[in-house]
Image (cartoon, rainbow, N blue to C red):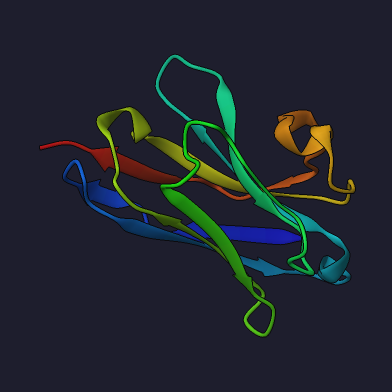
Amino acid sequence: VQLQASGGGLVQPGGSLKLSCAASGRSFSRYHVGWFRQAPGKERDFVAAISWAGGSIAYADSVKGRFTISRDIAKWTVYLQMNSLKPEDTAVYYCAATDRSYGSSWYQKLAYDYWGQGTQVTVSS
């Protein structure tokens, strides 16, 4: 399984960005996809996750109501729409894949077997 994250950039506070995570590889349809982020000097934290069938979604409390995760099965791509961005959202964003079923493990980076390379998001005026 290979993951390719893209869409990061520099945006002003209150602005929006849409990240993409393109997946490839055999049997990928049995995996679920999550987004994590890591700011300088901090741990890599959970942001959001979605089941490949789309029936289960989870968000970190810090992004609820501002971020939306979705997927396009035909394009094998998962998106993270980020609105009302704040300076504290600045981080490198990573997408990752897990075959664990929906539950508390989705919030743990150790549950994810495959990782993309990361894309930088900077929120600054």
